Image 1: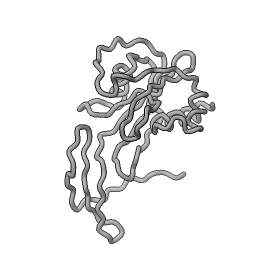
Image 2: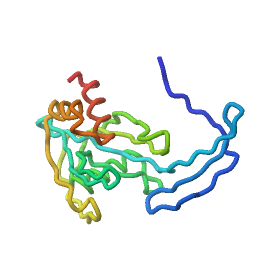
Image 3: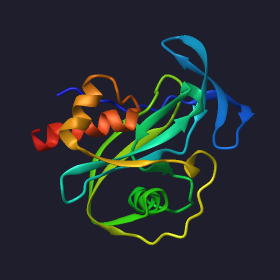
Image 4: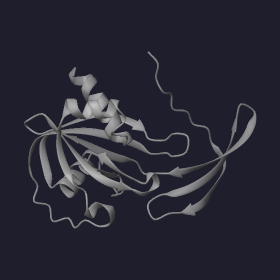
Length: 185
């Protein structure tokens, strides 16, 4: 069975190129197959996303503006692992409450993947949340999170949208496809 294989190749040098508001850009030099290579990449703490299913077997999608691609994307509630000591599951629960004002009593880890491994260290872990209730969150949204309309979509329609490339957010695409395969849709 094919699988990814972690490897430790030490950096000969590492320098911060840009200190960002959310993540940083580094340049690292390392030796690989007899050559000295330098690669620049975004160092990212990782993220979680929540594929949220209601009792009608509908999936929660939120429309969020994404400046780098100049589009509103249909996405899951999601966020970065940026709270020290917080587990991935705790982060997922927090993000679901903050962005969708929901909590869930059933949680399952669905899949993890690298968002852009050629230039970004981010790993996204997707959880499935079911058995929902209102969270009564007092979180105050800001920035792009101030305007994220929510819609509940039958999972099959969401899958069709992914296959037509109408939904292109990586966590939504990977999550919807993985959920469809896992549940036999």
